[in-house]
Length: 207
Image (cartoon, rainbow, N blue to C red; front, top):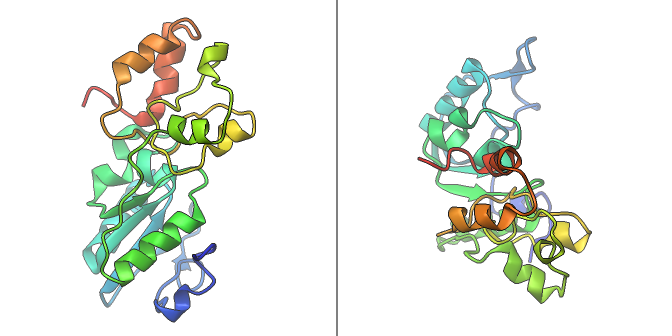
């Protein structure tokens, strides 16, 4: 299995455009001015579009790419402190997401290779808690500590909990996540404002 998507992927993909190498950068906020004159089979977008110019850039990429992959939690859910109303999936159609902060290189490589061979790529449906139990970690919630593992999509091998840190949901919600129950679980641990702030990483849960 590929461990680094930059190692052997050139065997399968030709990198025709890479911002920072070919892009002409604007003096304001280092935003590349892209003038695309051709279409692409696949485009990878990393980061959160926070300005009108970046939103226009995302739309330009979408028009010229058959497949668009959003990489990382900033592109996926807007990061922790960013505007959730302008997350990338709300601005343009996204075909695939590689979640996480940082995103997992192996997962990105698997996605690219699945797409290359015409196979169906899908993210894990299980919660981080499943991986946490496999790794025989002590449950932070049972120790009256914050953790969003029960509602966060797995696939990270519970890396934060393995290293003594709480899961803060950077991989986004797992399918059919029980938000109401998670909020109830957190009530003995956090105040209502703290719960609301913690859950805000997932965006507007009322939508």
